[in-house]
Image (cartoon, rainbow, N blue to C red; front, side, top):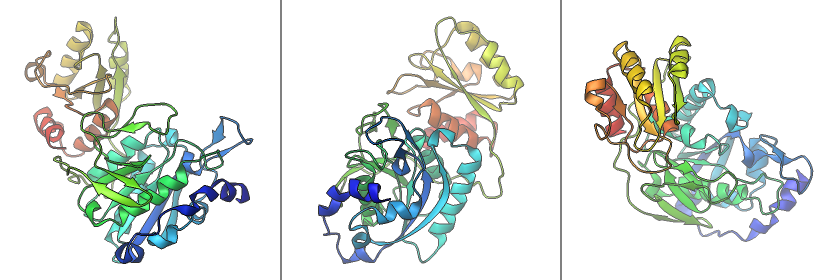
Length: 348
């Protein structure tokens, strides 16, 4: 812990001008592990172990955090986000909605690893039913690294959660002085601190040493789904398209119990003709198929190069394969009708 504190001393000059309203805000911190709570095996080494420090370590290690808000913490899990799964999602959603329903909580900040942060953020965005601020935060460098980015990110995330402008915007993500909507954000680099970007739309706002500037509101819905009482989510698999793609993996996924498939297609959600023909067959059998794209930006338009109406497929629009999977899992808790699910993809 002493090493962690020494690493963070550069943050001592963070701005204290948060205002009386922010200082009185009551923020609940839900910790799940990740790089932000990670430690190197040896100083200066590239490798590290996620989830080494706990929620109280994170809170106490950030200078002046208590000047922003009254912070309380809870360790939901302590894992690397590569190990995130549906069970943890359901547990986290339950703890988040419980915190938001409390009159003693004005907003929630969630620490999370960056590998699957965008999927967890979008999932929570769809199952959270409150206009109170929810801000997810992580880091690209472990807590013991030189110039660790986690403490500054956490400080700014709490500042965003205390901002009146954060209310009603759904789940937000704060890293590297940018605020992004959960629906839009993507990880774009394996190791750079400037990895997260809303590639199609741009950020929701900026935050610098606690000072928040807001940009455009989101035009898509949040909430709308409930996981209350659920112990598992429908199985949805993602298959990657490539030259000479066969039908073998499609058949294996269906045999394995997939109720839905997302294809990370080439270009505008395309794939080989044999694969497309087989997907049309399984769509008629009741498995919902979504065409997304392995390309990092752009829109998969309905009926553009593939006749989705005729084949019974769903077009993902702006959503990446990972987020298409999240939305399809939740959509399947309501219906298997591809027309109704297409409407959900248009609205959320």
